[in-house]
Image (cartoon, rainbow, N blue to C red):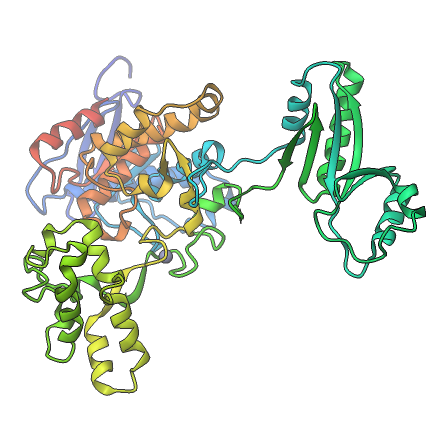
Length: 524
Ligand SMILES: [Zn+2]
């Protein structure tokens, strides 16, 4: 046996005497490193040959190659009914079945794109305060030292920490404890003083201290560019953050500079991004209201406004049609001019703000939210209970808007988009977002590998004909063909070489144009 003949197991997979199901003792040789298509009439044994013979044997051999420890999790595979199969590689089968064990699984998680997004956002995401739109940053010992050495040489800097008063301790008690800790000076009500002289001074009040009254002088340093001074600065800044519970300040050249190593802004203390922070499969990252499912039982807007071609005036809002509840509608219609609301425009043509106002209301009328709240508070009345039940259904969680993540996860942004914004984009739009990112040099360095992985997977999803899916799409809502192509793009994305891919009618439900793209992916 030599050369490139069909009998060579180096170049061909040889199957002899396959008899699985309705196969009648057939011999086949399949060329390797080629896209091979098995065609035939329904029931002619295509799947028996591809799955029950070729794949079954490939998988069996793969499992046998694993350790006995790993094997115990895999279940036993029977040898297919065949004389022999030679030249086979570990096989990966991609079936039509929609396989989902986790109801929270999405296109993003099953393709691993979401895992890379979590890493990307936790590494280079910037936290933006929802109050002022400013970036939340924190100081570190290094950043404060860098600031100090940027000051003109020969500057004298004083490092302060605010004293956090302790319960029931008087000023004098606080001062004696500071003295014991080795501090010498403080700033009391804006005046620098020696602790010892304050303790001796009869005028020093003997009552409790308020935060902001007393600052500890941690160190006074002359900036001189010496190595020794640098390490002394680092030690002192560290002490300053510790004594000040994350805050300290610097006085230099009659200016005062404040620093904080807390991740805070606008009076909010923010979480520092980590991969779990963006994980809806994890209690830490999941939206607390819907526990990461994205849906809750609540008022279903589609039931409240069933016919979107109707205008508000013509009764688009179903619960406000009756005579009694019509009072709610009347308030809106009578006042609509005051806030310029187009009551004769069909609901579908309203702007998002106008749709929103129907729910929130304003000072001229009460919206649907208060309407349903009223109903809920009066459910002892049977007609209210009936009415409520008519509009209840599974709806997008109001807390996370269906994104399943805790609300503050969307404060973290890359190029003004949060991870939630990205998973709501169709795959092709997400791809162009990542292609046009503008990053700093450091960010680009950190993100390089992650962006490559994300880009490859998004590209494969497009190439297998799924550019229209969003990463947030639930796996169990996909068609068989879509699900199979996602699995294919996942295996391709993880670039397992030397494997056999066994696919069952992969072009099912595909547009002919996309079928061509799919076969070019498989051939490459
Ligand atoms: Zn939620």
